[in-house]
Image (tube, rainbow over all chains, first blue to last red; front, side, top):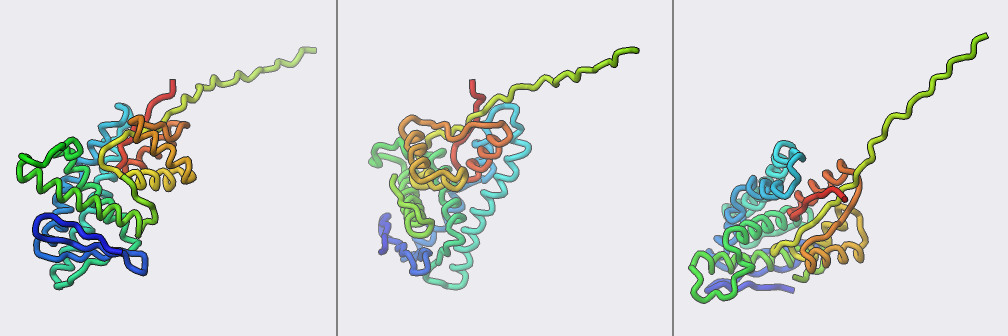
Length: 164
Length: 93
């Protein structure tokens, strides 16, 4: 089973593998750029860690003891995905394989990107794309692609049925 | 003959341990299936219990997913933050 995502002129194919992984097949240069945006959209890992710490009670010393570890963990996810995509491009590969053992890293990196996009553009409150600035429209379509990638990872690689 | 002096050890005043609740908040990004999976992984909950708590987060905006000692509550919050779920903790009143 495969799924395609259309945004403008290009499409990208996501296909589950028999080994329980996922193949991402970018169909154009634009698709590669969208993949590269995953780690760029995530922004500063410390931002997410700090915003989660902001939910904690004051005397928890979360900032001091937990935020550094969370930041490192988020950084690792984001860097792994960025490096995987860069390496695939550098070696002229046509597809990217997501092995089951790397699914959580991919999911986490994509989730960071979606959380950052939501914080920046409030996409969930966007009623109508008509009249929205180009930057926001572009963010919206990336978010939809990231959502599809997450759903495929959950359903076919991480073994959870996705409904949202 | 003197009677032996018996010393009564005074019981140390035990400070009542106040339980803490781990609370997951709703957000527009995390997928329902993902939240269910995280509850199963972090707490070892069954699919049914994890789904019930996830639906509570989704419909009520928050759910108490665990209650107990502060140290363990902090550990669970840290775990849930690692999975990028909006989580906090509150003293049970």
